[in-house]
Length: 127
Image (cartoon, rainbow, N blue to C red; front, side):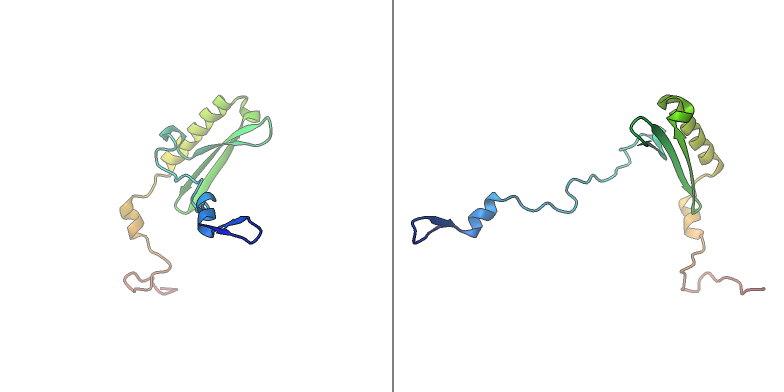
């Protein structure tokens, strides 16, 4: 609704202005949720990074048993992206075969440091 002023101009009400101004974007706007289908299985635990303007590297990062195993495969060392990616995949496969992931049952049977229920007790020191 427009309100007339004494000088002949009209003032727009706040409701009309708020309809023309876009609403503030939410916190999740522009962010994509990561899905299991985002990355093919052949690039599991492998990511590509641009180090400098003309350098590229592949990085392997595998986490097993609370330890992170990682290694870089730069194109300056291996000659091309394809060769570096092939070496990164071979390294990743060797690490995954050497340190298999825990099963869900094994994860549930692990002793937790924050367990205060008394169901799983550590033996006293020196015993």
